[in-house]
Length: 349
Ligand code: KG4
Ligand code: ZN
Image (cartoon, rainbow, N blue to C red; front, side):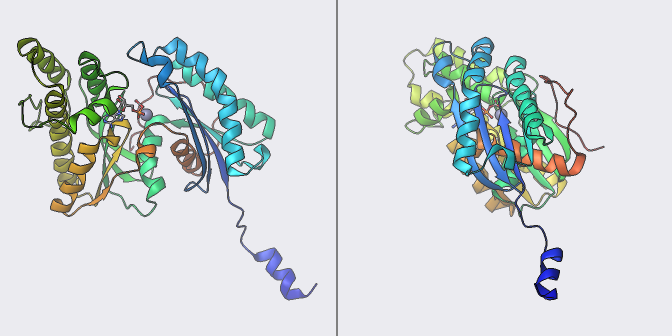
């Protein structure tokens, strides 16, 4: 072998992609994904339990935990197969440790720890809220902080400033129901089924968003949100006007939620001098919210980032991406770490 080729062999950078297996079981989606170098999705498999919970009108924690036990192993096997990798080729196993339902979280956390021991690779505990923020960065790695992110899901409504990777400041959050919870409760009341968000989104297309003027709680006050009064206003309206069109109700309710979310996000972006405005979380799949955020960004000269619908709702690719970042910034998580049902977003020090 010539000296030149020997030198090339010894000095060439290691280009082997660093594969992270991500596992997500915080609520009612059982998901696994393989992501290379924190940004290239090799596979993302999501088994939804929606049919198991639909007849109860919401997630039943006991049923969710049991279903994760049944579904997780085949979902992980599918994710590895789809990515074309053997388990032992992964560099780390990342799993959501919180927030979420404790019985559901424990399934993913225990499985991830077991795999990390068997394969001899690090375990990384991931914050589910941070993972939702990574869904934006995963699809658009060139996004530059400072960014304002509207993180709207079934359990959370947060207005977050991403000052740098891993450095977050919460400007506001809901003081009662989360935005997704409001969609789910109103849909249940209107008999539209579960999950309510997509159902209202579908029905609202046929309705007139200006038909009924519902309250816009805390619209001009601070950055906190409140949606429980809006839910009560819908119920009160229907009791007084039983003949009202469901499509008009859905569209008017949706418009009231979206008006408040977009107004506060724009105000926050202007105040912090953000370069961009991002959406994250299940409610970010809402058609009207996506349309309004894109319009607002054009008007305000902001870079919009609206993730694909699959990346808005719970998935494990975002967990693998956040896990890759945390592995490089903080190192592996100790194997005695447990599930943390009430975990908050890690805040800038
Ligand atoms: O992020 P996610 O999948 O799970 C949590 O971490 O909570 O969010 C689920 C929430 C549910 O409340 C669901 O109704 C809502 O996101 N959602 C939507 C839409 N798709 C899902 N809300 C409004 N419009 C949608 N298209
Ligand atoms: Zn979520």
